[in-house]
Image 1 (cartoon, one colour):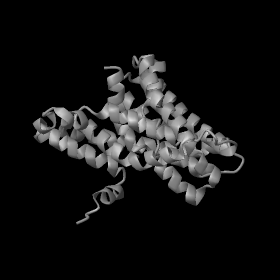
Image 2 (tube, rainbow, N blue to C red):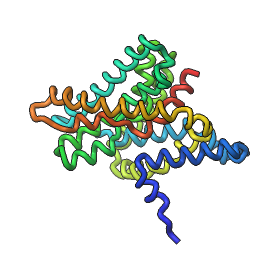
Image 3 (cartoon, rainbow, N blue to C red):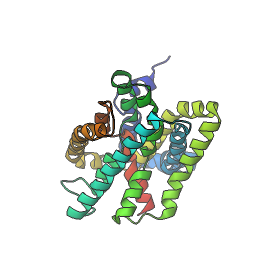
Length: 274
């Protein structure tokens, strides 16, 4: 019997992260002892988020093509710069006006985690309708914003968080190893691409296993507001991105999205700066 659980999860936007996250939250709320029996079960499903994030960053690194040059490199660099700039401005504005606690239930950490990420899968899908080969190639540079590295760097530079240099380096090393290995070995790159969904599922479950259902209900309205803010930035990004291009492109609007993996960023930052 084949019930295609993975296929059904993929039909839900961000399903590979959201579904395991919610399942783990429910288990940890109503039967927390199940995940605390020790051994491989606890190591993998309760305290394994850091190890899974390391593998996730290594996988992201394999998608960076250092041979990419010309227009794809330029477009990717511009997109990455705009996302980093958005995060820096968010940290400065929210930190100055409201401090780390943020506003309307949205912490400064949640805001920057949202604004420094974007949905790479959606960007690639939009390239098929609104872009060309150079737009699709830009993702090999643009994907550096995946994971918590950019968020941690912005928080550390702003002074809103005490992020040790070693914590930043620990995020960068798996990314660099993946980039080097992926560019030297195409089959390893393909292996990582195939393994990414499994890593995301386990990492998401481990994050959810340290939360409770009360957190979900408490953050509901602020989460909706955060989504609206992210979507509105897409309008701004559309116009700014076209200032850097000779030929107008609609893909700047794709920056007004948030990667589902950004939900995991606060936990990684908390480990670096408890």
